[in-house]
Every structure is written in C-alpha cells, then in structure tokens.
Length: 230
Image 1 (spheres, rainbow, N blue to C red):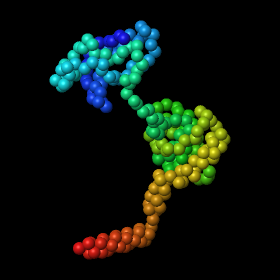
Image 2: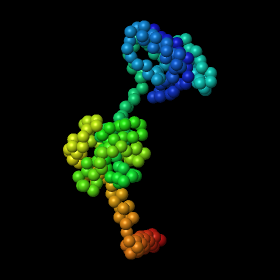
Image 3: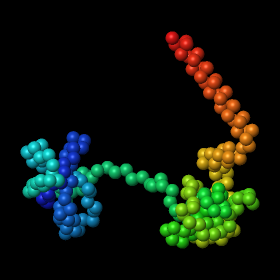
Image 4: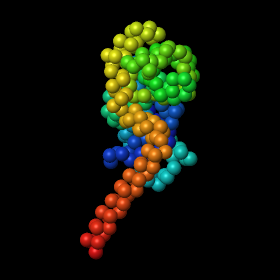
C-alpha cells in the first residue's frame, strides 16, 4: 500500500477520529498519484489520518507552524475513499429568475398584478406576460425591470421560452395561478392592507373602538387570573 506525505493545516476531532486538512500542495500530489494510477475519483476536503504523531496534542496551531510528516497517510491511493465525510446535498430553495416564474409587479401602471417570465433579456430585464382570468388583472406583454418585480413561489412548469400569449394563457389556467395566489398569505395581507387603506374616517373610528373593546376584554381576563392566583 503506497502513502503520500502531507503538510498539515489543521486537525479536526470528529466521531472519535482525527481528520486532517491537507495543504494545496498535498492535494496536488494526491491528484498526480491518482492520475498516474489511472484512478478517476474526486479528492475529499479532509480524510482520516493513518498515523498520528506522538506530540500532536502539544501543537496548538497548524496554520502558523505546519509540520511535515513522512508517514502520515492522508490517503492510501489504492484503497476506496471510505474516509470521505458524509455530505447531504439538498436542492436550492431560492426563488430563481427563470422562464415560467410568476412575478408580482410592484411599481408602474400594472402595480399589484401578476405576470410570468417568458424570456430573460439580461441580468436586469425580463419579458413578462400576464394572461389573468379577470380582464382587470391582465398584464400585456412588455419588458419589465427586475427591480420592479417581486418573485413569487409559483412557477408554470414546462413553459417554452418566448412562448406566445395563447400557450401562456393555457398553461396559466392549467397551473391554476389565480387560485393559488388568492389563497396565499401574501395576497391576503395585500388585500387586508388595501381594505384598511381605503377606509373612510367613520370606518377608521369604528375600527379604533373595536380595538379598545378587545384590549379591555383582555385586560379584564388577565385581572381575573391574577386575582385567582393571589
């Protein structure tokens, strides 16, 4: 079994083992050795040390004082990579700018309306189309700046790039974008804010009186609880 010497950078205790982080020169040696033996495998970022020096606990910082070990095996080059760390890879949960992403327009003549990205022009502009079910919510196809749009969690799957308004409308109805948006928390909060913004003076007065009554009932219940506890 062949070994490759390595310059240490740091020791990491994990699950009762000591894992070593090699320097870039050590990784290059390993890559050359694997290439020479025609082994097509990727190198891990850290691996288990085969031999631990006797004075390893006396060394505090390997970054400032790297130690050359002639018999430390960062990896036996002819054995499987059983010392690799277990890494769980998960897909991104970000809202990406992509064809088929539904956006909410937050400025301009179509503020508060939904549209879908049908083409990405550059890193600042997209082509959108909003064939909503209601005539008052339809957004004609136009170029929209990404700074004026809010990405929603909804997408239209399998939407072709630069698709016409007809195919976009069919896929829009198939994906039920209008009903999904109406049942979302963001849409409900926006509707509530719009209703409060459009209240008259007398309606605002009634809301204030109702809030006072609610606070009074809460305070009375708390007073009863404190009295019973004492």
